[in-house]
Image (tube, rainbow, N blue to C red; front, side):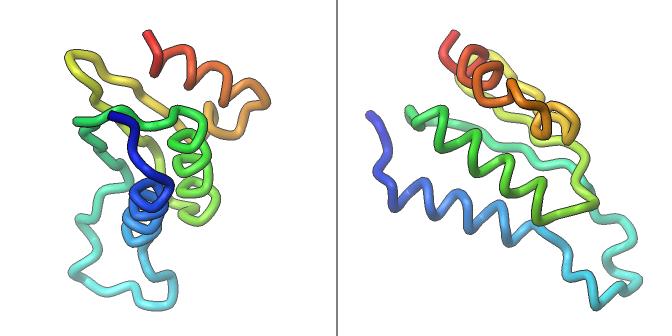
Length: 97
């Protein structure tokens, strides 16, 4: 099943909600992780998912990695990979395998 655009927008909003609030640095955020884990249980459009991941890195300067689990495999996306010119092609190839 391919998810609708609304569900992909929800995923992007979810990723945005993981961005720390830069104005408030409190003791409770000291242990906050800069890595995100996404467990994919349905078929997402890989180009829209890649765009959401890139937007997450653009909005969260402290983010290090997004790990996508799909079926029995995992796809690691680092900040450096998301900023490369060939990110969309690489991600879509890994996601579709």
